[in-house]
Structure formats: C-alpha cells, structure tokens
Length: 254
Image 1 (cartoon, rainbow, N blue to C red):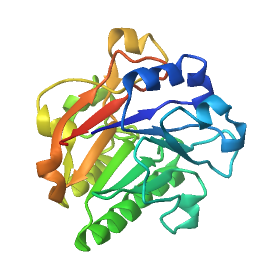
Image 2: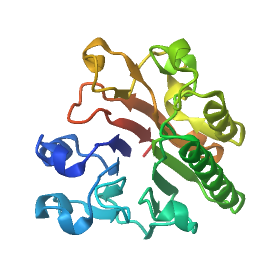
Image 3: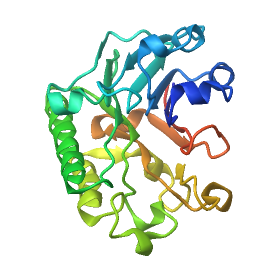
Image 4: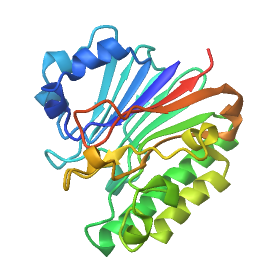
C-alpha cells in the first residue's frame, strides 16, 4: 500500500497542470492533499470524482484558505473533519480517516511566520494533535500522521540552516515539537530509511529556488511505534511539479 501526501497550493490550480491524469497514472492507494484552497462545491466533477477513488474534503471557513482532501481507493470506515477544538477545526486543516489497520491523520499544520500570535497558534496546534494521537495509541490504535508540518526538523532538512534559525519553520521551539513527537514514539519514516540523505519537499517560488534545489523538507509521514513492522519504504518525489511542494510517499507492507 502506498500513501501519498502533497501540499498542492491550490487544488484548482494544480488541476490545470494535469493533476487528475497524474493521479490515475501514479495510482496511489490513498492520496492526502493539503492547502486545497477551495470548498467542495467549487470543485469540478473531475476533481470530486476521480475514477476508482472515494473523495473527502474539509475546507476552511475563510474562503480560499487552507483546506485538506483525501482520495482513497479503500473505503474508510469513517472520516472526521475535527479534533474537537473550534479554533483549529474552523481552519480546515484536518481530515481523520479510520481504516481497518490504522487511523490516518491528514494535516496541514499552521505556518507561524506571520507574527507571534500565529506562532503560538501553531505550537498549540502541535500540542493538541500530539495529545489526541497519544490518547488513541494508548487505546491500541495505530496512527499515521501525514502532511505539511511547516517545520524542518534538523539541519540536514534545509539548504541554509544557519540563515534560517531565527525564522519560523526552523525555530528551536518548533524543532523541539518535532522532537516531542519522535520522543513520544512516532517514527519519521523518511529518516528511518534514509538517515543521511539530503532531499527536500518544498522550495520558495523566489530566486529560482527549486531549480537550484534550495529547499526544505517539511512534509512528513510519521507513524506510531506500534506500526514499525508494517513500514516498507518512504519516498520524496522531487520530479513531480505543479506546486511549490512535491509529493511524499509512505509504502506499507501488504
């Protein structure tokens, strides 16, 4: 099974760049999108009904902002749009799909660059998700968290760490939250298989950053420790264009 995650930076924009053809060719079992920037009623039939997939959407109350989606060849048992905290749920950042073998959290974590208020919001969001997932793990659930975390964890995860250590996305306090997830038993699947590989999943649109590969790895699949024996591989698909992010993939054993 392959679970893809991709911040598309506008689902209607990426549709114009061959998105549905890419999905059908790539054939993911589950595809999680972030930053869709659209309400379901604004989507074309081609986006709502990709052949072979069930689709699920959660948009923000604010129009043209945030938003997540899941396309799944395997019908989930249930899909939820919330973690029960209104200030987080109203921004359309979460879809939780329950499958027979695991719970999948598709999340677009907040960006903290605007000001101290948004940085605080981002850190509290990290805290709420971690508390909820750990509570579920204690009940015997297996958890996958995928999406745009908006934080590079280690110096290996961005091209210019020293130049960015005072900016949101690589602040010590943000990186400490990634540490907390890992210390709580989650596995960063890409680093699990490729501890020393330099590869990025996001590039600024400025200064020809993608062409020069001046990037950040901020898109992840984290899995709970009780799923360790099920993970087979992880990929970053640098060659896939259409967004300032590229897709990342988790492969589970059949």
